[in-house]
Every structure is written in C-alpha cells, then in structure tokens.
Length: 37
Image (cartoon, rainbow, N blue to C red; front, side, top):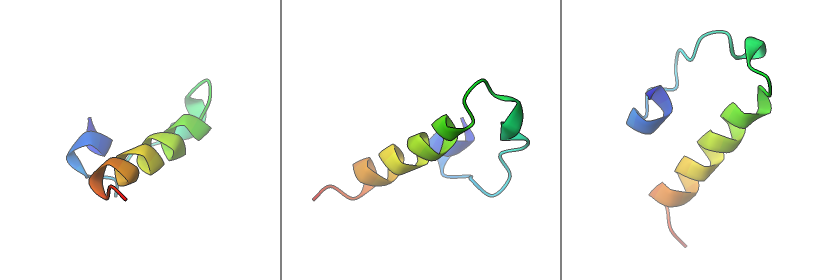
C-alpha cells in the first residue's frame, strides 16, 4: 500500500519477506508506470 501511494520512506523490515527483492522490483515497476517512455 505504501509503494502504491508513493510513501516509500518507511517500509519497515522487508528482510522478513520470503523474497525481499520483490520490494525493489515493485518500486522499479511503479517508477516505470509513472514515467512512460
């Protein structure tokens, strides 16, 4: 929800996720949607 609203300053402890790398991927995808080429 925080990524969707643009509030990425405090996402909490993402190391407990099964795949913490998914957070970075979500941020990249949101950025790509926000700035279409």
